[in-house]
Length: 198
Image 1: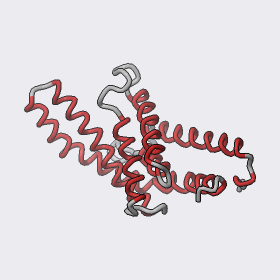
Image 2: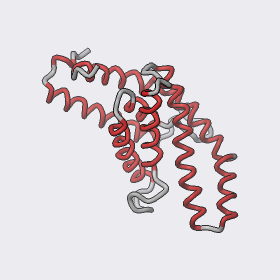
Image 3: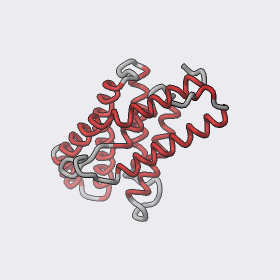
C-alpha cells in the first residue's frame, strides 16, 4: 500500500480530494441505483448517510456541515432536476447536515467510537434521523399548502407507512456500512497521520 507520509503535501492533498470526490460520487450513484439483493421492498441503503458518518468522524462540525450542505444540494439536483428551485423545502440539505453534525456531536461526547461496529450502529440510527428530518419537511410543506386535517393525515403516514421504509433503510445501512467504512477510514487515517493531526 502507498505510504502517504512520503508524498509531497500538494500531491497528498490532490490525492485526498480525488478520493473524496470519487467516494462521494460513488455513493450518490449508488443512492439512485437498485441492484438485485441490495434492496428490500424497493428500499435500499442510505449510502450518503453512511458516507457522512465516516466523513464526520474525527472532523469538526464545520467540515461535517459543509459536506452535508454540498451533498444535499447535489442530491436535490439529482432527485428534483427541474421540478423545484435550488434550496426549496423539502431538501436533502437539512437531513444530511443534521447527520454530519450529530455524528460529530456523538463522537465528541463519546457515544460512538471510531470503530466499525459503533459506526454501523451510528449509520442505523442516523439513517432513521435522516428519513425523519426529510419526512417532517414533507409534512410541514403539505400542511402549509393544505387544510390542517390533511396535514394530520400525512402525520399518520409519516409514523405508520413511512416507518417501515425508515427501518429497512436503517438496517440495510448498518449492514452495508463496513463496505464504506473500511477503505475510507483507512485512507483518512493515513492522511491525518501524515498531516500530523493524530
